[in-house]
Amino acid sequence: MTILCLASYDKGYDFLREAKRQGATVVLLTSQSLQHTAHWPAESIDEIFYMPDNEHLWDRTATLNAVSYLARTRVFDRIVPLDDFDVEVAAMLREHLRVPGMGETTAHYFRDKLAMRMKAAETGIAVPDFIHMLNHAQVAAFLERVPGPWVLKPRSMAGAIGIKKVRTAGELWPIVEQLGDAQSHYVLERFVAGDIFHVDTIMYEREVRFALASGYGRPPLEVSHGGGIFTTRLLERDSETACRPLEENARVLAALGLLRGVSHSEYIIGRDDGRVYFL
Image 1 (cartoon, rainbow, N blue to C red):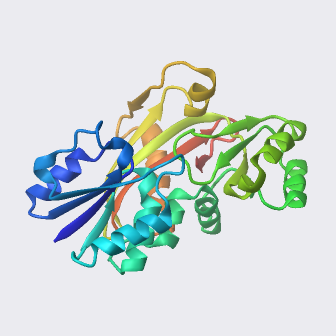
Image 2 (cartoon, helix red, strand yellow; image 1 turned 120 degrees about the horizontal axis):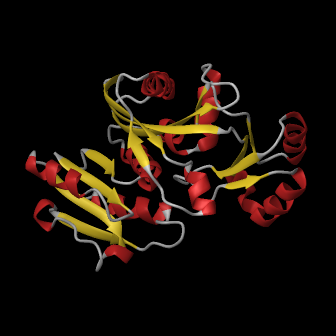
């Protein structure tokens, strides 16, 4: 088996070593900016290739052409992203090369905050009230209907990157105008105060084989905007605090259609209503 691994960031060493240990031929496609800084486990990599990168990571068309060129003389049995930001590119490559694995539609449910919220809401999973930052009249109606504060989020970033908390409509619109043509790449949602948790999961054949719940010391958004120390802690496995996000996590992954793989999902227990919301 030949595995093409995508790594736009310096990570995934353990996977590369394990894939090689199990007898796979390992091909790594990574960022040119990492060529002289990353310490890839060379003994576990058969071939390594570098893609030019910029603030938008790799150009999708260039990546598709590069991998298709490599596939002229290689058969890629699996394509594995080693970072969050590589998930959608891997899905695009799988569909084009017809390699087994998650395609673009399902990948969007795990990377695109608008797609995942719409899919979750369709199946009755609680999510904060949200709207696509697209039609201004509909956004204005949302601001009238849903009390602030609100959170403006990039649809395809990770963690708290690019997230802005806004308190009034007057504060929101100038930010939106500055986004220009990038507005449609954002989602606006009601800010829910409460404790935030994350669940890390291993899924196989649609069954949760392992799941671990943890709680943030302070919300990541608060730390990224206000400073301080980022902390997270493991929760007692059988405690009610752990069981509630774990139960919701199983529902979420089933609704989003994860067949096999790993997942990191975040939840908040609302301070005002005690509900578990999928973030």
